[in-house]
Image (cartoon, rainbow, N blue to C red; front, side, top):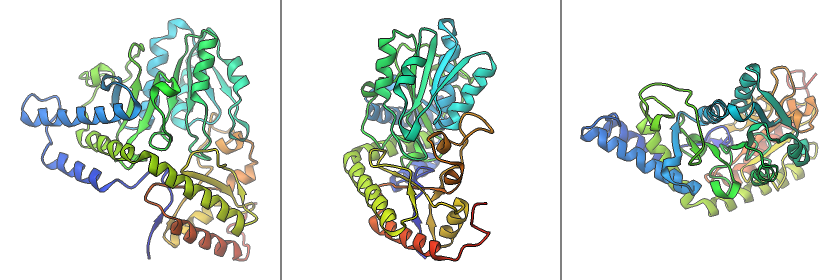
Length: 385
């Protein structure tokens, strides 16, 4: 049975060149990058080559890129590092209701330490920019907003947030969680105006366990990981040279084909939305064509999303449920509910996410399986009570 992978927002299949790079680093260039001998120097060279590839992708200089273990650590480091280093300017953070848990839980920890936090709403996936304007003031140290929401694919106007910060003469630094936007949207650090940008390798066909944080030159940061002083003192710990080198290779390949791949994924997204609307009239589309090119979120009212995921899994088709992550409060609304969906629609939401490796025939097979599932007589095993 052929497998159809449509869960690329969760993780992507590594490029063949990426897996080859990992094997080479593990078998031929396995030295500690801090060692002075030949194997150490070679390992360090591969890290710096990867740093340059990622810097080129973001339009920055390599010294502004710091490697981490992934998007979560990059978010943690950006928020904690910036807030702790600049608390003399104020103790106020502004963020959105739609952020990933790596952002919301880090900010929640700071709130417990006495920081004031303002959450800006995003009804229907549209960030309330008037509320953002009101929230940012002279006591705001950090504004953290994602580029692309990982559940429905809506895009937040990061550059407009930067404009507000400047207009209000706020000292706030701007952090952007670009984990879902990097390699999916054309942008540079300068074009969005962010001072801090979090990205992850395994979202662009790299390997899990590697990420990076862009820190604009001159931004004052506090380290949250102490040790041997690697990554110019900001992130200690022996660098995972195999994963970092693979990250650099994934970035090189992704951005060499970025324009073509964005067009391809946009075509798949639009084709998928049309097919769902045509073949499954009861479905409610939660994404729109103004969102990111790789995400389609929809609900099947009255049907538990988990049962659909398991059914498709049995047919070798892999998607995800769309309401798995909670947002700002442990017992509060899910991200989808914060966008205005009812609890029932959130519990029936499904996410399809594409990569350049997908085709229209993948979507055809998915839709056929969904139509088949929806024809099955209702039972207590998959109806939401």
